[in-house]
Amino acid sequence: AEARRAQAAQAESASRDEARKAEDQLGRLKAEARGLAQLTAPRAGGGFAIALDAVTPKAGFEAALAAAIGDDLDAALDARAAAYWAGREIKTPDWPAGVEPLAPLIGAPDKLAARLAYTGLVDAADGARLQGELAPGCRLVSKQGDLWRWDGFTARHEAPRPAAIRLAQKTRLAEVEKDIDALEPSAR
Image: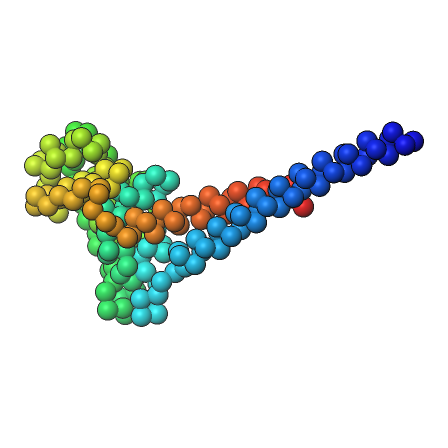
């Protein structure tokens, strides 16, 4: 009986250590989620929801979206705002070989459809070469965040883009929330 009691005490100690580790990990994830939630909280422009809060790029395409739309992501989706996205019907441009439309990789409201339809995704090494083949109004972006516009404007991914940081934080928050959901049952 004494041997079984010692084994049970050892098992209890091991279980408590595992529970503490799970609780610590869960606590760290929840703290990170709280911080990210504060950073990514919807920013109301004059009381109106902004486009940034309504877009969801596939993981890894945050920098491409930020290059494509930039600070215009801070504009509202409501026509009553001082700066807003009204949307527009457009004909999708013909892209040169090697260009993939960006729109299917981004979850966005219809009001952003025209901007996204005129944005193509390319490998960073091909952007400068394909820039000269763009139709007026079109732009190319790389996954890293480089931008080439039809009018000759170019911005490398090193150019600071606050929208890219906010989009990456939003994506990370979603990942952390999934991790929390997966860990909570075992921590309990």
